Image (cartoon, rainbow, N blue to C red):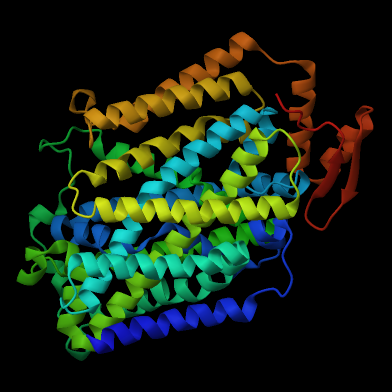
Length: 529
């Protein structure tokens, strides 16, 4: 008990030390607070992205899926790798628009694209709501970690309280430092969570030092572990497609992903960071799943697949390795929770409050509102986590979050790559898709068998797309809207394209060339509704 808790305390102390060492002496501007001054390099961006994508539950739920159900656990590798690969295609436009229009959040981009405050508020609300269940589940995962670290000496309630206290204390620096604190600690937390875990996995698979598994165990996997759902079992033929498709779309829609793009110092950095993310994420998760698959014939693993990660390392190296297993999960979960809370607070401040008050807010006011929002968000999540720790249907909330977040994808993706669509289509598409997805998830919390096991989010997404296209076609576009979209797409292509557009017409845009793109000051670039 003392060894494992001591290892967690040492890790926590290093994180706090990094935060104090990198804290600015003066109060940051809101741009510095929200996107780190757009100043970070390739590996900082990559590790921050990975740390915001793979939570501690990866070592519990997904690892348990591989250890208990076999290759089914690999589906997350497909959607995560494809999602990051597609993000590479979006990164250039997202970063350049962020620089040109001083964007701080994902809903900020949608406000500029559709010239609508209503789009901004709705998109932000969907993002904040969808992130909330993961913060709750993350807090509960931390409670489980302290139960393991105490070697069962602490009760479930006591472990949960300690876990909540630890993450609430950690949020003091998240609230104070904003994105800079997250970026700097994500590098260390990500190294422990994904690099160290990957190294351990490779060593275990070699069978070295008395490892309970090896590469040879992969040859002894039974046929039942090599079958995917949907082949005549309890699921229909579209189930795996639905999971992978929803995962890919969701990975591109989470507001935490866009926040990471905006922190990069240049377009080149964004592209290199995205490629590095693919490398880290795919390598880590592949190794993790292979370890889980190699363990399927171990009796203790089959008795409790969700705890397989801890079981294996305990069998391999006793208390010290079990302590390291706990620290790895602790690192992953703390980074993911920090990212979710920080982005939620920024969106409440930048996109919801700043829009609803209908008057400009200073950097100081925006920062104070963001900090207060984070505190309230954390406290509310803590209360819900405590009240629902043993609630069997809490998974339903997580399901709703994923099915809900993909409803941002229609106006987001089409807005980035297509000049059509308008604010009315975006508003009614998101609202109808989110409501339908949430309602259907309440009835079908896993899949809809009558539709071949498609999920509720895909049904909502289909309605979302239809409403977006139909409403946009009926309401049309003004000349001002067309001119604004042309300007944005020219800015996305770079300095020369925007200069050519400027030369072709008389407007109020002042263009200043920068290293990787352009920055503009437009007198009427995004009028509010």
